[in-house]
Length: 417
Image (cartoon, rainbow, N blue to C red; front, side, top):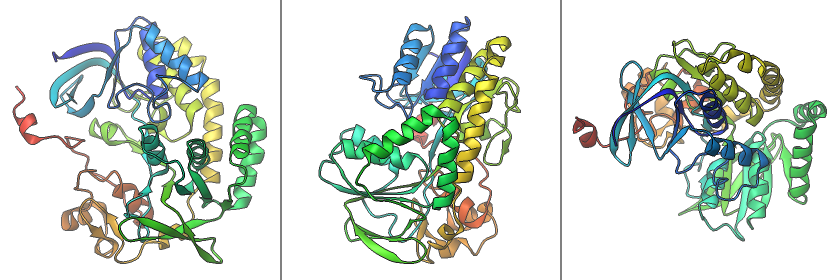
């Protein structure tokens, strides 16, 4: 494929990226949005293009189709190719995409916390299991326990139940009083309150335990059951799958590689979504996990800003401010409890790519030292799983993002003209 040049290039076709691409294109800028998935929508709107069940997804996907934005799917950003250019890979065909302004909307991924047995087959991220079922994994009649933290647990449980799974438990680590305060706060957010009530109605009859978390997964060739605790007692729950995720963490590899300042685990931006690198803006979960409405508001602001339409961007500041207040309430309600730091045992694998157990890590004082001595974070996932885990467990700052930011065949890269 020949190299391409655009006035505005958006990386990530989730809600924030779609909103940014639509606005920039509608403002008359030659715009492209690229994503590594086979179709736009991101994780939250995966598969919605075929037959959308979400009015918001249908609206934005249709708006994208009606815009002049070029959509490049199945494309992965590999490296920074110099000022105003990215090296990308599509089916091992490497080419450069050039831009005047770059908008990063690379989203977030699930946070996994190690505990004994977490590497057993059928212990899967909550969102990951949902994606597998959407892709065709048979789940009818399978017993599923859902555990971890955050509103995603309820959405995943409702989805799995609708697809025929037998959901036997939803275990939320946040304590009940915090969730009550969060629920009361939804009184000022009627749409979110209706959605929460709808989910609870769909999940009627399923045990929902607060202040509850997995202690260990048990099984031989695959998962057979999970031991749970509420801090006072523990019990075993038989299940075929454990869908487990402790919130989301932003995907920071590309903004870090480009030199954007990272603060408190997210990309630092100004009121126009501009990062600390000129010509690079950022929107959505990459600036801090805050939900769909915040992602859409930030995406629109970034798109209009990139096109120089600051009056349009400013009109969305109030919407973004409301969404940021909701984000703050989410952060308070679902903050991870300290007890989760004690789940890992000496021989529990923390870096599953390189088979690095916990006892080899806590001998060191930093991510860099542990990486040099144990190869933690040097496997195929490049620290995407173990990095957030050691940040939580040991307080380390995960550093040193280097190209390529995704695994690629070296022969193909070396053979590029």
